[in-house]
Length: 211
Image (cartoon, rainbow, N blue to C red; front, side, top):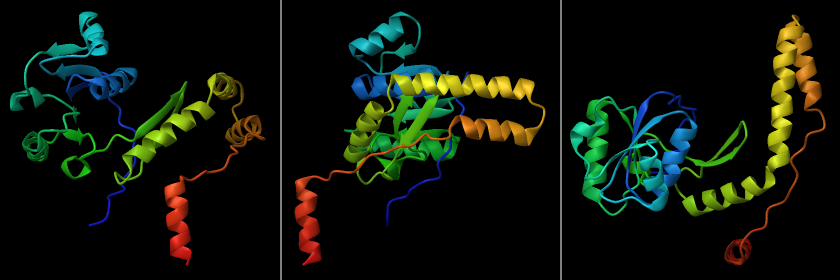
């Protein structure tokens, strides 16, 4: 079976409770993404890294210092499982998610997930999701890093300026077509430029395929 590209949506988690399993760097990254989106976050792990300990001690997340229990999913919108070394747990979570109807993302285990969290470029209001449908997560990570460098702090300020123009236009211009024209004019001339450079391993393989 081929990779499942999924159907991309933006999930509103503001004020909703989400669960993260794990206490290391990957869990911390997922927790921060959820907090940035306004979610209430519970972290379940016997141990936490420094980042998560700080978040727990400042009451930004609720920490349960133990292993996962099925009852932990009661009232939960989304479970993010960052534990990769326990296939039995991943399968149990998947079956439980289908039964209890919560969303489940098990990191790098798309076949045991009901949703996937793509790599994310975040700059001000910009949210740029990068997915390879689970077939090349390392490439998705590289794309996220390099796109993050491209969309710099000036882009964030530019986007703030566009937001201000949109707010002003909505208040001052009653005609919908004139509003759209002004907003289109504000981005006239914006262009994304660049080129792709491929690794030698692929270039060698590509040459073989041509011959």
